Image (cartoon, rainbow, N blue to C red; front, side):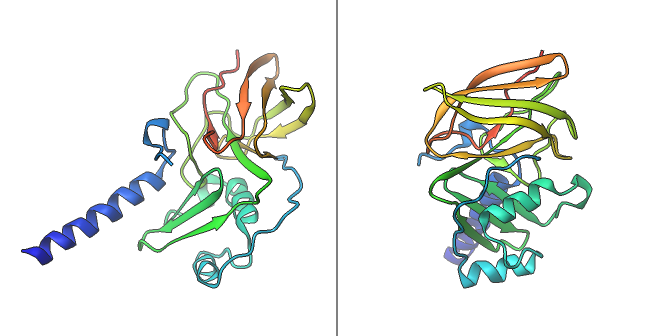
Length: 208
């Protein structure tokens, strides 16, 4: 009886972990605890165990930033269905359909946020899932400007959403400011921040 209970507990933990990573994680699931990209000024070493995991999924030799950029830019139809990749503020959590899991540290000075502006429909999201999150506006040109609270321009330019409807931005860590997105004659302006408790997935920006 005790053996059965242990097996049930193990299966339950694996299911919960897979469910958490499988889709865009909403804010109420957060534990307590161009496409344009900024230059990657720091590479984070990949452990031997992580490299074995990455090689198994065709990502050998890539650090966390390169894995994120590769998966984010991949056409939706080509994205792996046996791999879940959840972007957290300080790490990338990877898990496959055999419950193999590894984590890759993100650069100390960079924060990755993936943004899916929308016109009519959206979904809740907090931690971006690189293989399952889908936004409404795929392959759309956007004018994006981010200005810090101190008035300094942090990012500005023309970006194109990926096939999944998201545009990924590498921003300095621990900043706060305002983001403005213009799509044709439509626009949206909202606060944005890149602290330890901030989302890596933004799906609340409706262009009107």
